Amino acid sequence: NVCLNMKLAYYDDVTPPDYQPPGFREAEDDTMDFEQEPVKLTMGEVATPFHCIKFDMATEKQRLEQVEEISSVKDKLVMKIEDQGVVQSHVSKGVEEP
Image 1: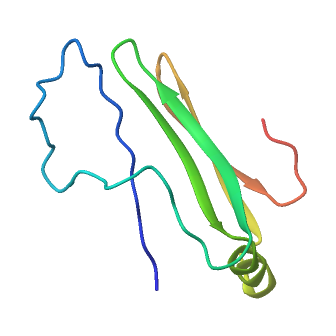
Image 2: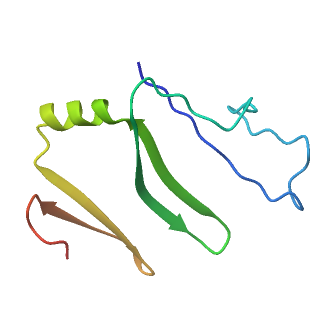
Image 3: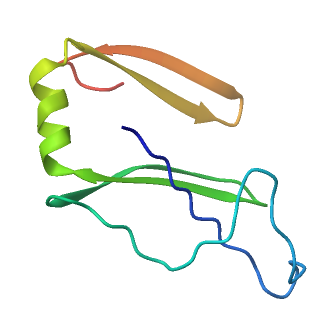
């Protein structure tokens, strides 16, 4: 089973009190329950002059270890965003990033 929970934060001074974005519902509390030991991963952040999006992930440590054991991914893709646009580079495992 896979479950995706997203937490959205708003500025109280500019967000209407009854605002609820499409596809979301108000949470009952601010906790996440795990059956086994959790691990939190910080995946990245994108900031603009108007918005900031952070991507953190929490999962059970055992699940992450299982994925690492069966993973056949040998390469990774690094994406760098600059003022001129998006620059992509393919980086093989063990090779330094550009």
